[in-house]
Image: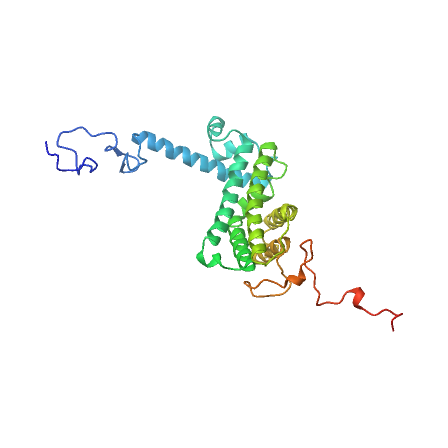
Length: 285
């Protein structure tokens, strides 16, 4: 026996007359070996079955998106989704526990796209030393581009999710918690750099997330009502204001604002403008 070859090195071909192992057999549906088709000992029929199931799931999601957008989530039943998608009701329950689970899956696709877009922006080495204004502007615009890429999906994720049931609400609160942590991190970074006052932003961020959701939901109900760029500008303004980062003057993104503009509770004041106390009264004339 030739032992010169490493035991980890696979043979280039099976010996003549040898029986093929399952991993060497070809998946007739894909034209690949079973090993290439997923690394498991599966037959061509099993590969085809998994493809059919994936296609069926995608058809259910696509159909639900169309029906939820046209008729609303409350008015769309599982039976109607299945009839339109030409999928048996029994097969629906092989993919989803119920209608709420389907809605959660649709929302997850949009929410995950938004979070990944924001993280991708911040992973850019150029963002490591960037100022808060630059970071917030870039990540907010990237987030909006991602979550509004498909207006029908946007409407479901932002307009149809409210009041859809306890499981959906718990799912929505989970995502709110993730975004709260994310934005809190940006607020703390800005405070450490002197670009925002150090304070507890918990309530401000809760209000901010609600405002963002409502603004995007408003756009999704009629995407032609106003341009997405206008929505992006408004979201950036809201985020900067909620985190206490100045928005009224176009300053250098990497230059912290004057500390004298901060009050003890973290709000901005504009000492350059006279207040009522600075105006002379009639008695003083």
